[in-house]
Image 1 (cartoon, one colour):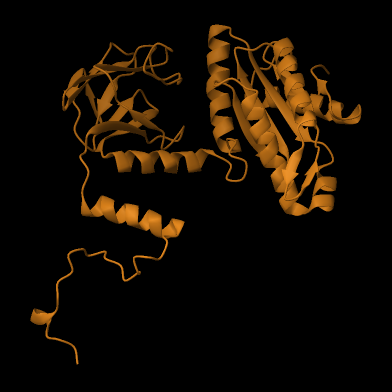
Image 2 (cartoon, rainbow, N blue to C red; image 1 turned 30 degrees about the vertical axis):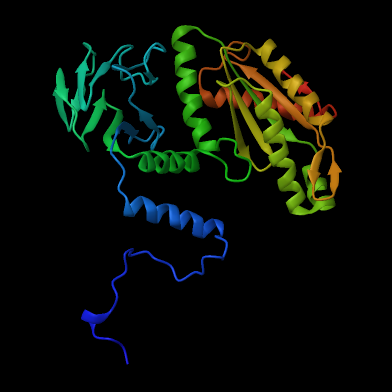
Length: 320
């Protein structure tokens, strides 16, 4: 017979567990405990975030730091947003302790808060900030935990879950942005399209888990050989693509050949076995193929990748 409600002992923690103290926490339970502590002891909303809410880079998180935070197309801004609808120096957010003010810097297409065009306005939690006709953010006062979760969600939306490389959707959006910037400023831009050689044989010999290990290995080897500003993405299956900002095609060939040599010299470790993989590469740039669209640039790289396959694989081709 249970005790009346008034006589039942009150729990000091709504999330208390009946698990014996000696039982080790599993990772899932450890994460649950971390969330419980977060809920039991609310954190300070001590940071301001801009969360991208338009179709390009939706979910991207920008943390406002310093006294002033510039937004615009020019690289000198704290947030460089390459969109034709916004100005080089479009707007600035001034930070004074817990106050945040956004100021339009004479932009062509305007700065808007909650749909209203402004010249200067205080930002409040939950406000929508629009720059020109296409770029939009949500302003949020957040805790450290919320910032971490938002960044994790964004990473999950732009990364390939197996290899950790960027996914094709993210690559396509970045290619469009970089293509527009390079065309507007007369800057070089190259892409490398590559494909693992005889990948079906890898799967047949080592199983699909071995094939997965090969793709993860490739991604890690290539990540070590690229600049921070270079973008490696999984394009589909065993095909990857690399976006090289400010790099003409001859230097793209040098990058591709360096990655090719690194890949063939470092074996894949899968369980107790090791095996080697190679890849074929096709390189193209705005100038060498006179591309006027992103599709034309990718098609040129794809033709050259096909030639690399035809000519014996494990090589780099940069001409038709």
